[in-house]
Length: 260
Image (cartoon, rainbow, N blue to C red; front, side, top):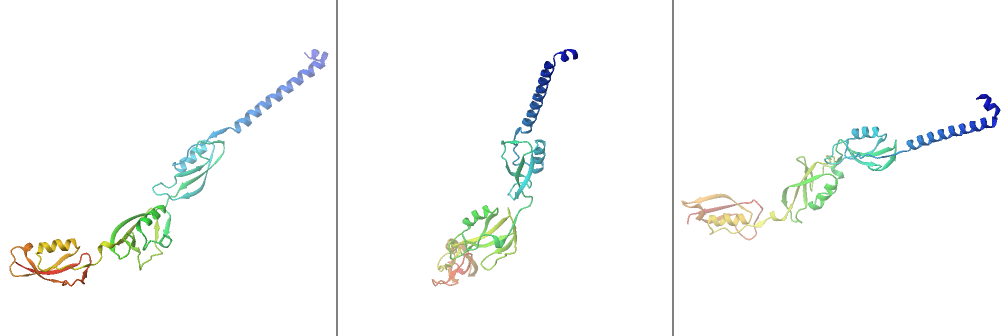
């Protein structure tokens, strides 16, 4: 073979050149294959609603890296739950891509009473919506007479303690988001009314009249022998009827009666 190539040196150089070019071609193909695989795009998994530790394990197996950018409190969501991610699930990205996520907080945010919207004197239904946006619950636990518009906030309680009223503002109290505030609101239907005239009416008639007027019978003084209380007539009453005296809801109207 050596003698053959010595006899034809041009052929020897020609074959060497072909071998060099073939080797160069193989190296190029291998390099291109490596470069293509290195830049291969993968589908982004869906990490939403997963625990952050579980999401981090899945991301690591898929050659991604989880980065927490923010944490917020969300009512009813377990702490450490992935709320949002970027890139979104289903996107095609390169291996090693960083995934930025927002997770839920483990403890509720707190807000001071002084940072709440103005509650006293405002319409309850309007503030109910506003408080809901801020993550608070609210319910009505009582009503009080007020000459102004009905359903306006008169008192606010938190865990049984009065924190807001006309004369009270517990600015230093902290309230956890997700907790419930209790409200006493205004009611025009429970104000003062004129004491009715009860004399010459039977006790049963008086009971009906006072009930419809939101008044109740107080002490009863009996004169003589009474066989049937319901048919006994009223002789006098206290307070007396004069068209001026007024009683509030639940006022005890004292009256005397006797038998017919």
